[in-house]
Length: 240
Image (tube, rainbow, N blue to C red):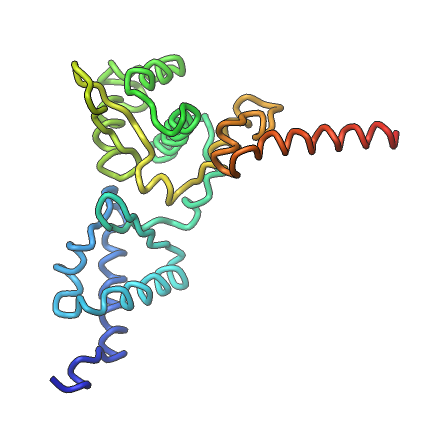
């Protein structure tokens, strides 16, 4: 086979990238992540060997032209989702319930927080109790805001990649636990979540939660930050 037949022409890649952009734009209202296999089957077809190059060009077009981001989710299977770049900033997430999308965003942030503060994984029955204290009862199938809460959390959020819902090994009767899903890491971070928790409690620094702070910045980081704060306060008193 000749060298020219093995090489993907730039023009072909550019054309395929535009096809991919159209595909993503048509999928912007879709909640579930788009699997790589689906993209290959519906868009790339015989140009699958140029997948990575085409994807990078499509991402550039989506960002520069439409203000949309294509986020790659590595686990459990490589897939992609379309997000408005504003969605990537979690500062707007709060406990006030607004429109349906904002309501679910706020609930997700609360779920991420509960899971992270519990050690990055939490048994489902403990999570349900925590949500119930906040007025979100998983036993209700007609919650005034979220409808079927248990279905939303265990099925929809899991299918959308925000959460993982796993059986705990060697449990009889079977018990399950929640962890962050791959899409959670695409829209927020441990540091953002810890900052969010501090805002809820008020007048708390992130290093006041040593286990969580250390998981972000390394073992002993919380203690070091606390010492630095105390030293700063002492120095200020001496100046005064």
